[in-house]
Image (tube, rainbow, N blue to C red; front, side, top):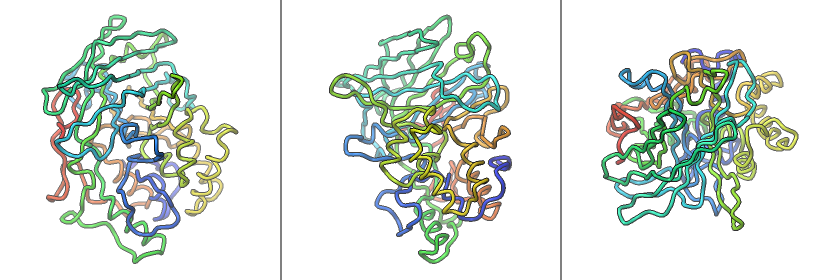
Amino acid sequence: MSLFFSQITQFSWKKLLLVSGVSIAALLVATGLPKALVASDHDDGEVDTKGRNLNLTDLYAYREKDQNPNARDGDLILTMNSNPRSIARQQYFFSTNARYEFKLTRVGDKEATPTGQEDITLRFEFGAPNDRNQQPIKFTVVKDGKEISTSNMRTTALNEQVHINQLGANGAKIAVFAGLREDSHFFDVEQFFRVRAGALGTAPAVGFRGPDRAVDSFKGYNVNAIALRIPQEFLSGKNGAKTYDIWETISLRDGNGKYQQVERLARPAINEGLLTSNSLLNAFNSVPPTADLSPAAAPIAAEASRTLKALGNNDNRTKALFGAFLPDVMRIDTTEASGYGNALNQKGSPIRGRMIKDDVIDITLSVLTDGKVKTDNVSYEGSNPAQGHKALEGSFPYLALPN
């Protein structure tokens, strides 16, 4: 935690706006609380044709043994959450007209600039639910241009005992879960907007609520989750890679049967933290990481740069932030313990993935305010009745059972 962003100079109090995990429609004009409380890519880039089941919320990537000491050494867990604000005791479904994909690049050097090269794609397509609310799954692995596919999988319906799908591929055993789980994100979003308004001078200055009054805005909600347990030796390739860049996407099928990417997510809060225009946020969501710093993405980069400078960053600091966070991928060096703030490379970019209980909000607040604000006083377990999540499951897929 103390390492996170420590190499990107010192930041003022207002810098918490950049990567706090909040989708900000008008970053520089705080007018009180928004109609919808959103965070960590929850509901970013809304358009009329993009329903919530086409909206990514969080990406987790970690070594399984760091979550479960009894697990087999060498397995990685990848988790994609979508469909934010799913209310308790209600069945929700994955889109039958979309592809949900994890994309991975093998990285030879943890200091290397991300390339956005798709060495491996892990693709999920869902069919219509049956009378038991189970959806069939077509799972496709595209590895170094070769395709492995199976349709003998299904989702777990609400209130059903967890169903784990298995795929054998080149001698490796891949486990797949898809279904409703509790939303694992935790943050006092309401108070954040009050703090933000005070920091921008448009409302009285306030701090975060104390532990006895802080509210977890995600308590009681569910998400659609896709989780994989995958052996590292299956991913590593001929060169035995131990470091990977990972991102996730959702692509929607058009009337001609072609797929257009409509959503993309890697590290929490990069796109929605730096971009203020909904149109540019949608543009960012539609392109691959290879385009993040390209001439074609100049309007996106320009707005992100204006946001950074409006918040007090000089040219050098803006350049450092761009170098640390773009292209936007989540890097995981599997040679050491997983954890979002556990280690950085020389550019100041996190390189140990992200675990379920990692408090990305506290990490961000503490470092970006130079220790002035250490916490929003919300934790995964919670310290008062207005917060707290269920206990994580002891085995794959680890996410807590749905509400």
